[in-house]
Structure formats: structure tokens, C-alpha cells
Length: 183
Image 1 (cartoon, rainbow, N blue to C red):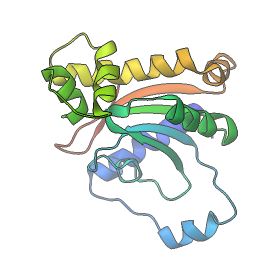
Image 2 (image 1 turned 120 degrees about the vertical axis):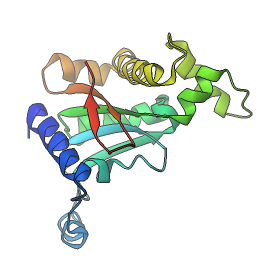
Image 3 (image 1 turned 120 degrees about the horizontal axis):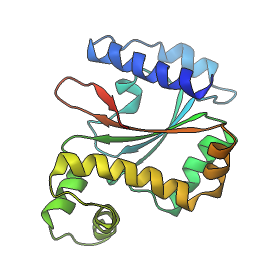
Image 4 (image 1 turned 90 degrees about the vertical axis):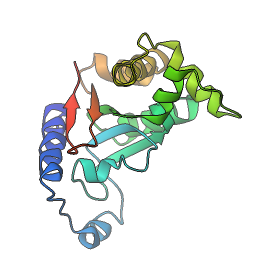
């Protein structure tokens, strides 16, 4: 599957999810993936428990490789996971999936005080945030994460340069479950 086919598969899967038609045979997929995985997309998603890429895109075990962190913030460890997905698993598509009403972005926009390592998440979101309006900031954050990955990962840059990897930012909406592919 190439990047365009992978993107089309995610978009079509989301259309089925929006209709309430999530359907996959986990038992068969579990059996088929015993020997290994062959995902067609790597997805950087928020840890929010309502944002479950397998459901949102109607995909089964072994189809998508997911890296989840609050606010989709990417540090060295999660960047290594992204590199594993795109280089070792050869996924042709890297998706940065933001979502409406993101708690981490909301906290960053409100200047809320946080304890512990949560401050690191807000600091990262605030580095590139221009808008104080949460929904605009969610989009800014997804694009900033994509830029950060390109800047910090030679592996990702080389795969993009060779035409072997496409990066797409998306935003998920709770109201009806649809995703928006961002420019």
C-alpha cells in the first residue's frame, strides 16, 4: 500500500465509523498477526481515552502503528517509536491526529498551573502556539508536531525526501466522529 492508498483507507474507515459500522474480526486478525505486524500507517495520537485510532479509522490489529501521548507531544522516546514505524515497519503514511477539546491544549491556552512532568507537555504545546482559541490551537499543535518530527528526525526527513513517506495532519471531532484532513 502506498501513502495515497493508506490515506484513502483511513478516510474510508472513518466514514464507516461515523455511520456506526465498526466491524472487524479480532480473532482472525490476532491469528494472522501472530508471526508479525505489517501496518500501513503510523499514527501519533493524543492519549485521550475517547480518541481510539483503531475505532476512529475502523482498523483491526496489525493495520496501524500508534504512538500516543497527551497533546500528541513528541519527545525523544516517542520520536523513536515514530521512526520504528516508518523505517522498520515501512509504513508509507505518518498521521498526526489532534482532536477537538484537547485537555492538554486547553490547559496550555488557559495558562493553567500544572504540577510535575505535565508542565513539560504544556511547555511543548506553548512553544509554537499562536492562538488562545483552543480549536485553532489544536490545529496549530498538530502541524507543529509534524514540523518537530521533520526537524528532529533525519530518518523521517530522508523517507519524505525519497517519496517513501507522506505526513498528514488530521483533527478528530467528538460530535459525530468524523476526521478532518488538515492542509
